[in-house]
Image 1 (cartoon, rainbow, N blue to C red):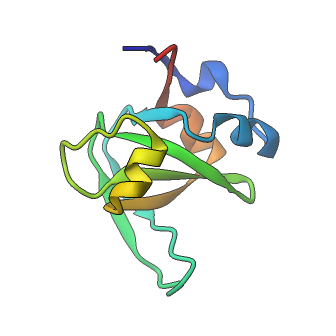
Image 2 (image 1 turned 45 degrees about the horizontal axis):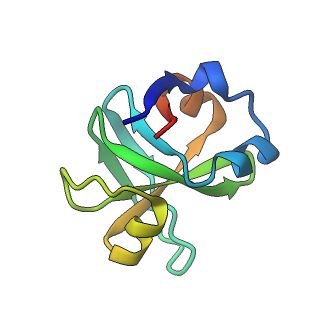
Image 3 (image 1 turned 120 degrees about the vertical axis):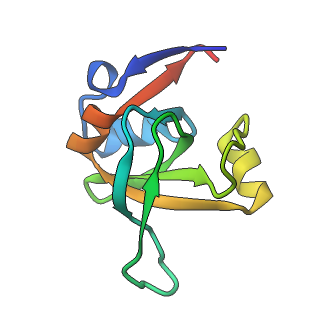
Length: 110
């Protein structure tokens, strides 16, 4: 098990740093309400709530925001982004940099 650190202490911002975090495990510090879902196919405006302590993975940069993938199944914690993607049961949310810094922890040394 790795060490969780507040994103604000390890993430300065920018596309290059987001790319360096792709695949990193992250978890929510608070209950996140009405987060926009990333839907490149339908492009439909939809949102989701994410409970406190939910573990997900940085998937990609999206402009000046991060795409973070979370399991669709409550309580399921995959070991990696690849495992989550292979399972096919996930949702991707768009998180802007200030929110990421304030509301997320990043795992190191796992």
